[in-house]
Length: 114
Image 1 (cartoon, rainbow, N blue to C red):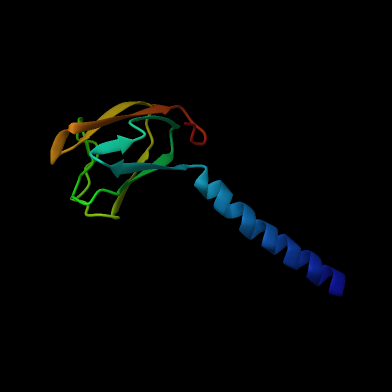
Image 2 (tube, rainbow, N blue to C red):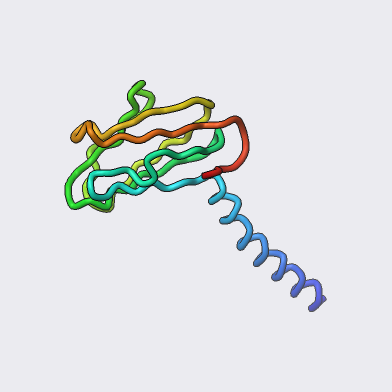
């Protein structure tokens, strides 16, 4: 009985350790700092969630040129996330500072790739 309890505990611990890794494989981060998106161009797989975080000391937004997505105005350390489901190329910019631009290339299926 004791061996079964130890095996169960180890299995549960392993499951908890592996689950966050699986969730992270479909998540990618883009930083906003010094009036730039970093990375400026990113290639991901469909189903990946991209999170932009404003690290600048002034507000910024993230807005798709095709209007597919648009964040609210983000102050320092605020974030915005969008999940890309359809393959294609998506250009975006900061609506407060239109010279700030970036591109997301979405490939068919699977986990994120940079």
